[in-house]
Image 1 (cartoon, helix red, strand yellow):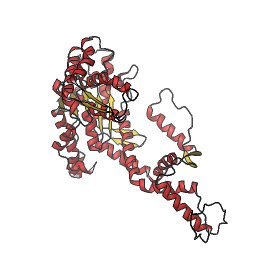
Image 2: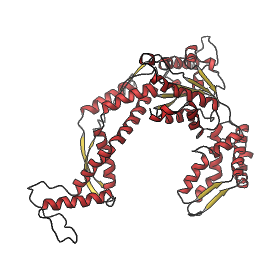
Image 3: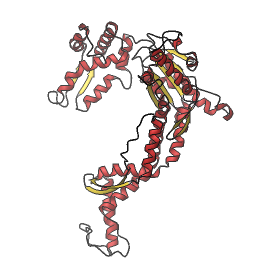
Image 4: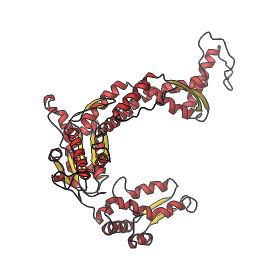
Length: 467
């Protein structure tokens, strides 16, 4: 966990979430408490840590109100492995409870990626030095002592005091080229490099009755048996630096240590977000139904041991899910949380109802968050040296139109703003840079919004615009 997390109180976590998400204070408070409780658990006596389990959270709310964004931002604040899965995918035809453990494997994969990235940062300075030496050797091979002179090394321009030996000339030349490399003066020059390439067996291992884990193990075993090939390529120094830095960083990293740390990180900090959990809740109570209801309940029973806490085998090792935080979400329009099987309900003790977004919420979403759509489009056009600005009245008009369309057609929450914004700005985005050149200024007014979006409001058949 990041060092800063130990100093982030629940109130400070909520303030961090406020930078990206408008409203939904109850949901933010509950996830902030859940995050802080993880740090509190790690400070508890060792004999108590195993018994303190996270309070999993069930978010109830329509699409587009911020359920996924809250969980994703929470994971970023905590520097925690995060994976999202749709519960409905486990009900696909022919797959009752289709490999529910795959969500845990995805979490471990994400954790390994995070730990490996952190380790690469730690060894970056050493790897960069090694890569610099490899590139330098390709440009000006070093001369060993007592090596006969080749007479090929360039002389120092304008220098009267020539080196006594070719060895000294070689070293001086290498240092000059090293400076050029560090100053980025030779990035386009071509050199030939050798690097290892993992052997690709090209052997198909899929077959009936073989699950994902078995396939991964067989592929890894075959890949480990075959020798790694050394490949030579003639590339620019910039490209060589990228290829070699990846290879040398991997050599400096202890993968066994990465795997152990990744498993530990996933177990203690991992967050799994299960979306559309309402799709596996049957609105009918009991009564020996068949068809989809059997499938839905089967998925719930397959999810149950994972959420309760069990061990799952991954290609990086065995992970225990006792302390993974599960955040489930669903609209529950047709079904209700009580339609879930009682055992699964009990594993999501914290229930939070997210509020539908109001017209004022839409206005705040367009204006306040760090990643607001308005700021994203401003950044896109800034790349073309075009200044885009939005008048406050224009933001309010867009919020009004988005809210109106949601009320009259289908409520897709804040995602409607993507539709509105795209329809409003597409003409500008198409005209830049040919018609609207660099240094142009575009100011979006309420009148412009009214003119360009009036068709959206009048047209009741908006299926082409619904995301």
